[in-house]
Length: 155
Image 1 (cartoon, rainbow, N blue to C red):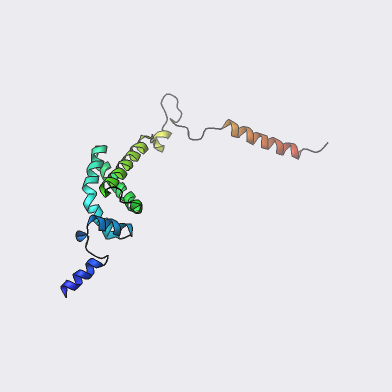
Image 2 (tube, rainbow, N blue to C red):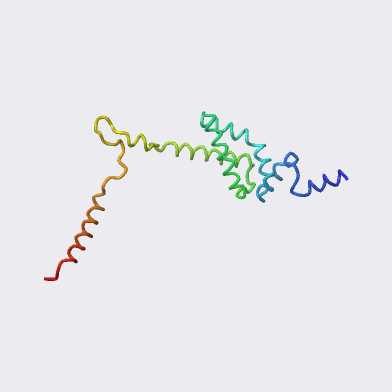
């Protein structure tokens, strides 16, 4: 009886993740099976983390990049065609995630508290969020002028 249960498990999609080959896990993951993707995660998570750590030099940031890489892999697993090894595809995806993270990090991040602090020399906020727009002011003035003219008596 035990043998028939095990053979049924291996023929169905419910086989334990440890018994899957990488190709089977890829196929199952592409079909939306979480066990297949979990198996791929177990196979490749250390290598992906190592790559992220090598590129970022920060263990916490490497963990974030690793998580982002596997989230993206989960979303894009259906686009894996098998033209290359899965590890090559995942490596490229991971590098792209880390590079995008670096690009986003380069943008200056100014907290609202810092921006609103008064500069000692000028007594003005260091960043002005809402400067008057001269083009917009002239349009508003023109609209108000037309309204005022239209309200004048005809004579």
